[in-house]
Image (cartoon, rainbow, N blue to C red):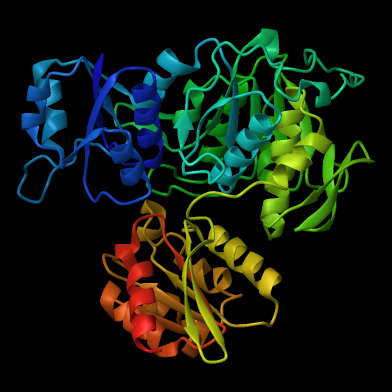
Length: 495
């Protein structure tokens, strides 16, 4: 069929577009503010992109419109619709659905779905789990909210005929002894179903379906990595988010597995609302899966027995927890922890996760510019803490960020910013479009913090302070006005 996707350049909708294209459908789409990496991926797939949401796109006459959650019934100050195409679809009676609903009906049916949920680390953990399964020869389908460097694409259908016997099937684990109350089936995808790994977002599905996206996925293996307040534009408090996570747990069958962070009280509250599946925990001293050692080189213990060792290029305690979650989920479908650890040793992370944008040579050392997707205060802190742990006292950290997410734009978490930036030597905030005073919010940081209303002014502030040996981390969940290239260009002119 021909499907036209509204909001096609979002990480989820862009991945959905790739899956639909791979399945043989004709795919077109529209969006505003197009930026890499999704725009590059879509163009490489030959998918036509239309700028904006003009009503004349109704003339494309697709078989189905797939509507992203960026679309709403909002009006402009003059009363005109912000999304004229959506109004035209409703007036015409044309067929439309949400992205998660389309995915559930056309891709996930008949598969063993492995869903990765949590406030932070979803994309990275989803990429880790997918790579572990790929390395084990299980050829999973996947949809990741980013571009895993091990694959080069954010989504693929995978082997729909897989029986779970992969290329490295001789190395999968033996079926362990079951614990009391366990109802898990034997190692390997349930009933030979092909695997599909999906990043499971708690954000709402569409303006006409306010349930969290992940309730559409019906996983047999579900990770809850962590849980704290976010998405202040649609959730009133943490309890409302916890309720949505419990809705996810209600969809996991009795033979399924829930993999939960043993360090999080909020996750524990969700579990205590009711659990009908097998539980495996990670992270705490009494968890089923735990780590001993530094984040870049650690032993993995399962039921207090050392079963693997992970040596890899990633840093930070958050990535160590991500790895444990991925290994516990892979264990559910028969991948031995030792094999999973071997796979993680070759894991290349995801684009825009502390990705080096470039370096500029200076007398006495170089300046490195990074691109990172962090935008929630906790994500800012874990990103910067991980870098500080890696570099120690060898160089300064310059944190450059924009409060771009809906939650941050509302100013709900502005008081947490000084805490989130504690590991940075200097912090630079883009305040354009904010309704709250960023200078006042960052005042506790004193002279360490600077604010600029435009990207160009921000570039000038950062370049004026940069010196040899610095690590400049640009953090945003958007394109950030191309600040990475602008910084590298400006710094190069100063050499």
